[in-house]
Length: 208
Image (cartoon, rainbow, N blue to C red; front, side):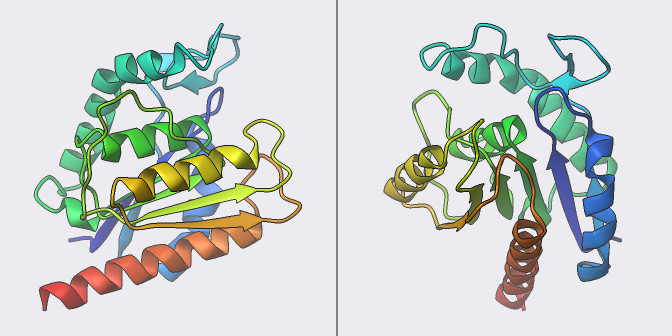
């Protein structure tokens, strides 16, 4: 039986397979973990073979939270399917959600909505876009990683998310990556896998 499950959540217009290289790299650091990267349920609005968790066509600051809310049911089906398939339905503390961009929005929403009290969340280049009410949970430490040169989601969104999540009483760490754009950099990947190692080891120690 696997010791942990890491679920990658891709960005808009991408596919789960785009995380394959990172999963292979992280496998060395967490050899007893399973790494899974499902495709989002919706086809990408602007064509190609990409997928999306929710539409960004005509998205605004005002309507984005409602789109996140509407995406929850399909998101839940995807996550529940993966967790059940890999045998973690009663071991959510051994599950981590790792998102990039729109995937980060959904990963953070999964926790602050109270639906998925998983063991850890890593959010690359994301933002907190969840509609109220937001829930507090002690179960899920969160790591926010964001490039200072991100032109798609400005670094201010990371700072705002950190303030909001901390205000909920959640354990939040944030790392700003100088010179990095809207991407998962080598340094960001290194920080993230160290965070996951620390969280999974800490939870094992807590249970002993």
